[in-house]
Length: 158
Image 1 (spheres, rainbow, N blue to C red):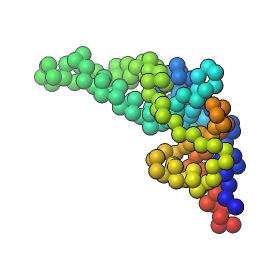
Image 2: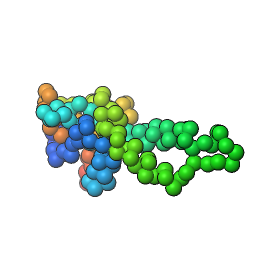
Image 3: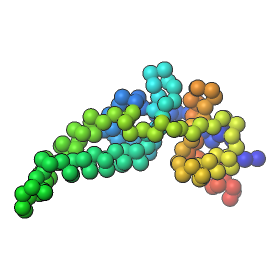
């Protein structure tokens, strides 16, 4: 018999607050070796998800903004170029100012604890996502990732 979300899910959830900075989230992802986390409000209600892809998108948007600021004078003076020495510090300050609520994905797919593994796999594939949250009503119970489903496949060979 194939497992359900209840049997597959990780219940030790690392969540983030929507007011956390993107730098804080980046550090959290690196320390915990994760690539995404649920975003919960002060009451513990799931309001979104923040992923490494969201961080990359925010970095690209901020990088584009910094690159095209007139303060660099690239278009105004011949042979001028950006002051790359000041770039990383300025860029870090920009990311420190950005909040999770500005970069997170608010549309979150949730499943019930009784959802079978093949259904979870189908949802992940069709939605092009790597994780789904398990909930009962408004209570967040756990997370099932693509890696959890790979574990199921590994056990099939035994």
